[in-house]
Structure formats: C-alpha cells, structure tokens
Amino acid sequence: MQKLVEIVAGVAGGSLTATGVLEEHLGRIDARESEIHAFNLVTADQAREDASIIDADVKAGKKVGALAGVPIALKDNMCTRGIETTCSSKILQGWKPPYDATVVTKLRNAGAIIVGKTNLDEFAMGSSTENSAFGPTKNPLDISRVPGGSSGGSAAAVSAGFAAASLGSDTGGSIRQPAALCGVVGVKPTYGTVSRYGLVAFASSLDQIGPFTSDVRDAATLLEVISGHDQMDSTSIPQPATSLVSVLDHGVKGMRIGRVTDLPEGCEPDVLARLEAAFDALRTAGATIVDVKLPSLQYCLTAYYLIAPAEASSNLARYDGVRYGNRVDAADLNAMYAATRESGFGEEVKRRIMLGTYALSAGYYDAYYGKALKVRRLISDDFARAYKDVDTILTPTSPSTAFKFGSKTDNPLAMYLCDVFTIPTNLAGHPAMSVPFGVGADSMPVGIQVLATTMGEQAMFKVAAELERAS
Amino acid sequence: MSEPISKETVVKVSRLARLSLTPEQAEKMTAQLAGMLEHFRDIDALDLANVEPMTQPYPLKNVMREDVEAKSLDRQEVLDQAPSAESGRFRVPPTIGFDV
Image (cartoon, rainbow over all chains, first blue to last red):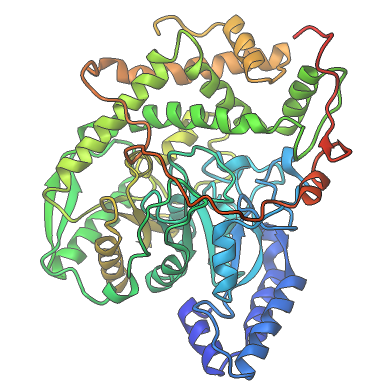
C-alpha cells in the first residue's frame, strides 16, 4: 500500500493520478468493508469528483496542495457540511451539519480526498467500538478481535488500506489505543494544537484531534497540515504549526528517555517485553535511559472517569430534540427531552451522563469532581518534575494487544482500564503517540507510546522515528 | 462519600440529566455506579488540602477577536436539520401547564 508522502509526490509529479489512487482505495473498500465495518458512510461519488478536479489541476500545471490526491477518512464526530455526521449515535442519525470543521476545511484546501466517515464508540465513549449504535468495527488483522476505540473505524481504515490516512479524536486514548491495536501510527498532539471547531464535544478540556497513518513520516506530514491557530476555537494555541518532518532523521543521540519505575500494574508480560526492547533500541541508537517516578499515575483512572463524564454530562445536554438530531414526541417539553434522550443514547453514554451528573450535583461536587481536579494537578506536577530530567517518556500504549469481542463488555471498569497508560497525557494536556513495535504472544501488534511535554512534538517524533527504524 | 449510592439518588440524578430510566435500568445503573464509585475511593487516601484544582491544561484568560462582521450559519440550512421548525423558529411541545 502506498504511503501518504508517496501519493503526494506521485500525484504532484504526474506519475500517479488522484483518480487512480482513489480507485485503488475504493477497490479495497469494496472487497473488505462488509466484514470490517470501518465506515458509517463512504462518500465515493464526492471523492471521485474531488479527485478529478485535482487531476485536472495537475494537468493544467496549477500548483496543488500539500495533500493533493491523498484519500483520507474522518471519524464520524467531525462536522462535514451537508454530509451526515452521527457520532455513531441514534440521537444524531441523519443529521447533516450546516458547516465544516476547521480540520475538514484544512484538508480540503490541501487537496485531500475525503473518502468517508468512520465508525466510533458512541460519542467517542469506549475502547473497542462495541458501543457504536451501528455495530462494531472489526480489527482488519483478525476480525474476531476489536480494533480498539473510540476511533476504531479510523484505525481500521488505515490498517486495511481503505484510506492512506485518517483523523481521529483522543480524549483518554481514543487515537493511540486503536492505533496500537491495529498496528498503525496514531498521534494525540498537545491540547490546543489542532482546532476543535466542528469536533462534536465529549470532554472539552481533554479532547484533541490527531492523525492515523501507516508510518511516522506520514503522521508528521499530516499533522503539520492540520495544526495551527484557529480563532474559531478559543482553546487553540496562538502559534503556527511546529515543523515535524524536518526532525525525523535527526536520531536520538544524546536524548534522555524516561522509564517509569512506578508504572500501574496490569500490563501483559509480552507487551512489557516489547517496551524493554524499545528501550534497548533507543540505547543502541545513542539515547540515555533515565528512571523517573510518576507516583500520581495510579490515580489517573479515577480523576479521568470523574472529569470526563462530568464534562460530557454538560456537553451532551444539548441533545434535547430541539435544534438537531432526533426527537421522540411527548405531551410537554420535559417529557419530550426525557423520551428523546432515553431512546437516542446508548447504555454507555447514559452511564457516563449519570456518573457525570452525579459527580457535579449538589452535595457531591466537592467529594468527586472537585477532588478529581486536584488529582489532575498532582499528575501535571509529577510530569513537570519528570520532564526536568528527560526529553520523552516511553510506556506501553495499551496494557494488552487487541482483545476478543465481548470480553470486556459486561464490566465497564475492565474496559476503562484499557486507557490506563493513555489517560495521563490527556489530563496534563501533553502530546503522545503510539508507534507499532513488534508483536505480542498472539502475533497481534504492540504499540509503544512516546510521551512528551507541552509542545514537545519534535522530541516525540524524533524518538518515534527511531523506534520505527529499529522495528 | 462513604455511603454507597442509593437507587433513590440514581432516580433523582436521572431526572436532573433528563433521562427516564425504567425501574430495571435504575437497578442496574445503581449497581454499576456503586462499583465505579467504590473504585474511585482510591483518591480518598491523598492529602489534597493545599492542592490547586486544575480545570484545563492552560491558564484561562479571555480570548478576544476583532469585532468584524462575518457571515454566520445559513438560517434555513440550520432549521432544515431541526426535528420541527415553523416560521423561521424551532417548534417545541407545550412548556407550561405541566408538572416538571
């Protein structure tokens, strides 16, 4: 399968056509989408039209964009004007947004070809896509296993060659964990790097958009295009995009890589073995491995599963059957709200709305939400101390490789534990990415997570590129 | 936060959240929330008295833009996506004369 950068060079240089590239990807979708279910919607007609415009531009000698002709899939929680955006929820089924998300505008301006909207856990709440109202996505490497979540469709689309790249959103690991489970690269940038305008909000202080690609260079290329300040997002960092592709060949000589000595328990031994191999590879490449302590890491799950549902319960109050989405009619307004939300939301979404509403309610606010915010500060302080001594930190992305369908659906807490290594980054607002690094005992891919401090993307990409070279 | 969450509290919270749970759903939800809240007690052991809460990754400050006229969303396009609209407005069921 072609890399994103090969497509860009080929299309701009005339050795490939956008139409030809697109048809190859649509052919793979035709062949396997019925068993994988990566997409909620494939926009083949519009994609063909867009590709023919790129080809005409190239033929006419016009300058084309940085992603001209690249087939890209979007997680179905990013608004696309006039194109159904569902968040894999019945409550939004059929909704066609009246505007494009900033990332969608940026992709289109760069000449990317949007091939469809990918499946997710409803409203991005889950770690396996089993919470989608439209049925789960299968892991393309073994269809008896989950692709991870919540951006499982976006990860599967790249893994199966349905798109050269995709975008996901990451609130507690929803890009990195599915990337690890599907054997692709997934990046959660620094909070505020990529505009969230037009991303359907889950937990606003944690959500961040990022890329899925088949390698590190493609991820750097795509992230450079979608990053940058946007006045439509008040949390957007007022700085231009960081140069990332330029540092990929710098190596890691002299870099200090953190090994967390008090990592939370519960990680499978085959995954930990790959982590050790990653440290060895970086040491061989000239980096120094430094032990760091993050004592508050063990409390991350609690802090996250109070803060994220609290924010979600507020954000999801807007689904009331009035302005968009679906309505269940009733005699009066309050009865309509309750009937609409009862019928429109799935079980996990309701559970999190309930948990969040409870954590924010009078009498419990200080005991739960207030405390969780303080724990968030401890975690942030732990990282600040650690980053005085190291440039990046390495952990597993996920405690295990891709698991079987149904193995965690009866126990919400077991599912939540999938995020134990990815959550801390979101709480701190830092960047982190998952890079495939070998396989586990079951021959399924293992992802290694590279963490860095705020705006530390260059260090993170240097290490990720080195791991890729060594794998 | 020492007492386990009761079914009555769950029903009250469901009303606050505008979710109508059946008695069976409320039963199941109570058990699941109780399990999670039990797990979340791990942070009770921490001394948080002098810790500043962290509401977001960056210090809050007002973000302003130039006050320039710009096109907003197309009204008809927005209303076309509403479950019910009439005369340029969203239409809702009666809001008064009922118990809330």
